[in-house]
Length: 210
Image 1 (cartoon, rainbow, N blue to C red):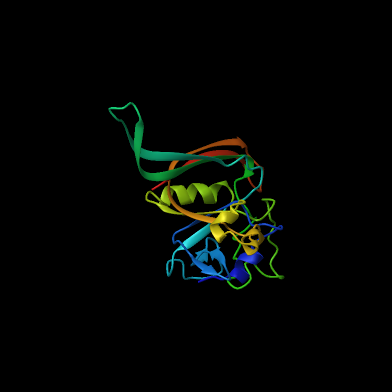
Image 2 (tube, helix red, strand yellow):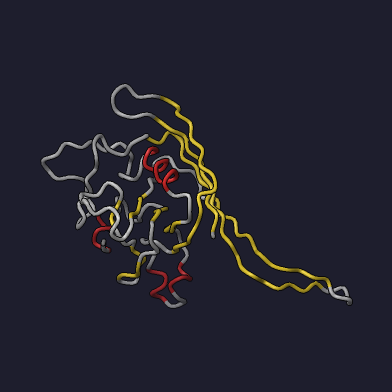
């Protein structure tokens, strides 16, 4: 389980990280999309009750390139006019990170399941990614353990998902879209190897809507 309070704890700046991967489609709490389950690395032994989710880092992230593939059947009629039967629009996302730390913390983060904060005040746990989001190893591990589809939470300005009134414009600081997708490609390079803390990776990946 989780809550919008927990997600606020994992939100380092005015807006959440651009992407989150989840085993479940989550739920709507206080008019915002919230994942259900426990974050990877959370301080709990219940890792499979409702699935897990992974908050990706914006640390040196490149643009999210989003391509809509329109699936349709087009036929040219006897009079020369084109007619189309629209089936669906499917989203493809490609994104990359440069010089992303291979790990997000110096030790297991043990995210508090109520606040979303890492560890407690008595534990020295150095944060390596700029926002505490997943490091390269966490992303690779998710890829290796998710051969099927999972849910991708996206945070970017898409206020039309919330309606067409004034209130719809007030949802910038939250996830605006949830899409079920496959990881169709995951490539990484070990750029530099750290002495005792972490390596630096370059990562590029492609997501394809089911």
